[in-house]
Length: 90
Image 1 (cartoon, one colour):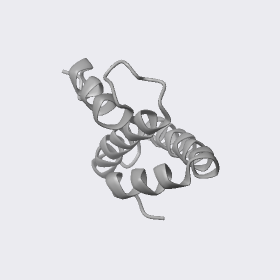
Image 2: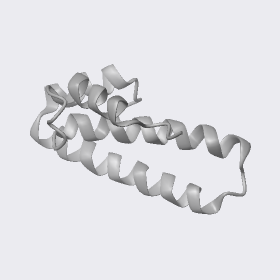
Image 3: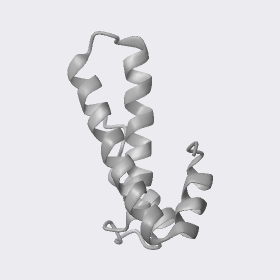
């Protein structure tokens, strides 16, 4: 059973992107990446030698960092609200 079902994705986009169908919003994408990063981090705590998952995690962290950088430049108040809501440090 997948950990990230269609309903879970729709609820993430509804909460952060405004609507469940607004999958292109930066806020929704960052929230989805954060959910995936959290899941893979838990997986890697018990599977330390899973290097392909570790590489995928680093790629997701980089993607989230780039999206947050873009958002910080173009919508500072939204950026601050998003990192507060997601519990990210910065």
